Each structure stands twice: as structure tokens, then as C-alpha cells.
Image 1 (tube, helix red, strand yellow):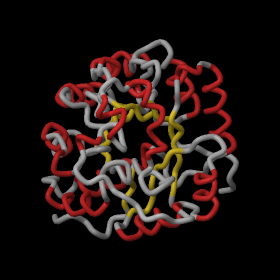
Image 2 (cartoon, rainbow, N blue to C red):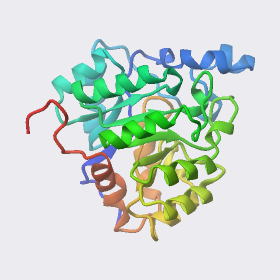
Image 3 (tube, rainbow, N blue to C red):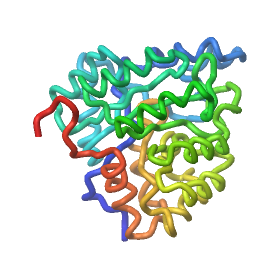
Image 4 (cartoon, rainbow, N blue to C red):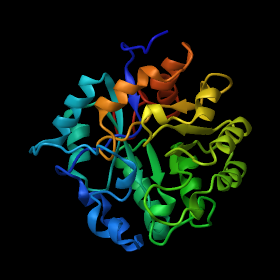
Length: 298
């Protein structure tokens, strides 16, 4: 069937803007960058990979701005980052109930302090997931490193999915922490953990598929990839045995415009039965969208 334009889409990677360029997001990367172009000229660390990074008009209410964009492209629910004390996340939760679920970007270098933060945000704010960018941490932390294990154990205990960047990172930093083979050990030791691979897994996308066949709770999201660049191995897997494993995620406004994403999506050669699962059903199942969050009334 053609692209189902009446589907209530779940986007597993949007962000509430903070400014017209959002350069504030990338301060954490600067100590890791060695080349002059990345340090001085780029607005975002992987700028060389993206032709038309969205530039936003200034506004006093970026939450309302994002909701308007979601409405325009039939995005019913978006996963956005949530830091402790985040005014934007608090406003999104308060003013637009049901439109957002919240992810906590964790730093395993912080040890038990980070575990306590995750537990507090889960109990008090109702976060739906935890995420980690192994190559973007300072110091970097491999996917299977001992510092990651308390995060994994906490996510299992709380029933939270964890989203982890895998594959060669876009920013010009070492790639070793995100080698896809590291995922194997984690899924073996934590069979209950819902592990969602982010950002492509390239050039090991065939291995990512093999591991998804192996482990029932391993998933893949399409974050940071324009639809015309979705890996062939991922499309083929979704069209065969993996229709329940592949989930839509964008990259707005970090690197891709929603206009480009939704212009290209109809050309992705998914089978008819894959589209509803890819755009909505898989994410709703894995992230328990529609379930009552901690501290909220049913």
C-alpha cells in the first residue's frame, strides 16, 4: 500500500529546541574534538554529514512550536530528552499531555549518582526510557563496559527500554565504544533488557540484523538517517522476519527537517503490513505508550 498518511505516528527522536541553532546541545563534545573544522566552524559535531540542518525562527515557546510541527506531519507522540529540572520538559508534560514521552540521556561515568537520578526521574516525572551515546561521553564508555552495567540493571528493574548509539559515530571521535559486536554481550547477560539501537549501526548493519534475529528484546530505530539512506539490510529485515523490530525515529531539529523526512518516507520500499508497525505499533509496545506513568492517575 502507499505510505499510510492516516497513521498516528510515534517519533522516537525529536528534541525540544532551545534556540535558533541549538549549538548549546553540543558543548559536551568539544573536549573530544581534535580537528579545527569541528571545533571552530561546525554548528553541530557531525555537520559535514548533513546538507540542510534546520534553522529555526526565534520564539518564546519552543514547546508549542514543536507541537505545531508534530501536528503538521501527523506525529501523535514524540520521545524527547528530559534532564532533571528541565523547564521545557516540564512544560511539555503539563501543557500537552499525551503528546510526549521522555527519555533521560545518561552518563555512566557518574556511577551511583546517575542511578539515583534515573530512579528519581522515573518515580517523579515518569520517564519512559534511558539513552546513552557511548562515543560522545567524556571519557568514552563502550557499550559492554562495566560502567554501563548498573544502567542496564536499573532499566531492567524499572521496565525501561534503553536507547544506545551503535556504529561509527558522526562526530569525529573514536568509534571503538560503539562497535556493534559489543551489543551481543549485553543482550546475553540481560535477556530482559529492551535494547534499542540508534543511529544506523553502519558499517555493521548486517551484524545488527543477525543480533536482532538472535535476541528477542533487541530493536532498531532509524534515528539520524534520511529515509532514502535507510540501510538495505534493515529494510530487507523489516520486510521479512523483522517487522516487529524496526521503529521510526527522526532527527529533528538536530540534523534533518521533518519536511525532508516525510517527503522521502513514501519511497521507502516497505511491504504493506510493515508500515503500521514501523510508524507506530512497535514503539507503542516497546515504550508502553498509553500505560499509566508513575505518579499519575489512571
